[in-house]
Length: 55
Image (cartoon, rainbow, N blue to C red; front, side, top):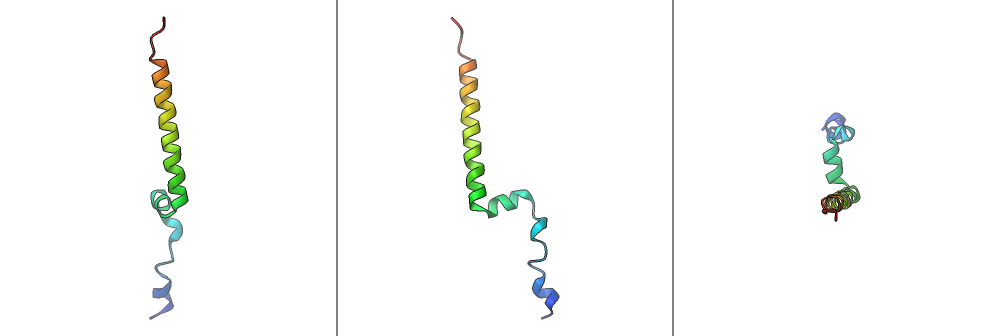
């Protein structure tokens, strides 16, 4: 086996899409999930507050 064939799987780790990098890192995925849920609950709360009728 030539050295070029051995290095081929590790040749392009930097060209992965950001979604793949997110799924490959458990802490980054957990942080993204936490951020999503915090932001969704904050937006939901703001919409809930703003739709309360005055008076």
